[in-house]
Image (tube, rainbow, N blue to C red; front, side, top):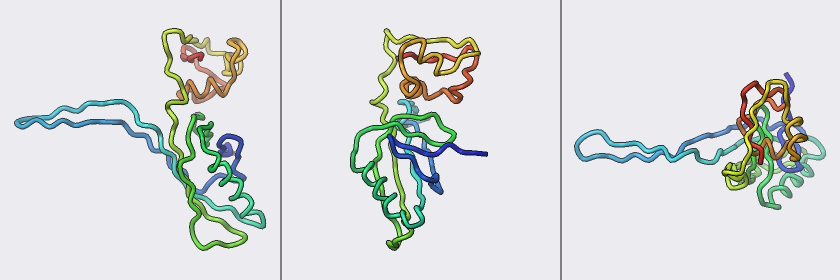
Length: 173
């Protein structure tokens, strides 16, 4: 099985990190009543948090870590691609070098936070395309004059951009 390389903005990991953890959580408030059961209120999803760790090995380990550090230092939001996940906008929120510094090996940990403000919510003017079953996101991007990355960012529920299911709804931004 071949996994897609992890990437953020224009940086592509030379080999995927050893661990990647995707945390999904909801903002849930609990209200207790003095005599009886309380209430629970679901206030929606919190931004995804992606944490992980890895190592760069070889003569260029320090260079590779410097490249990753430069992406972190640039700041801002960018498209995060993870193996087996739909790409989404995220902010590179932390990068930590671990262990004893060595010239041919660098261990690191990272954190990304989903940038929910980067994707505008579907308003009254947003178009919704209902798929016929033989379409791809590339077809829809060409049809509506947009690009695939925008469609993926707006539609994180799309698991297979090359095989949209019949009846699947895609928001056209």
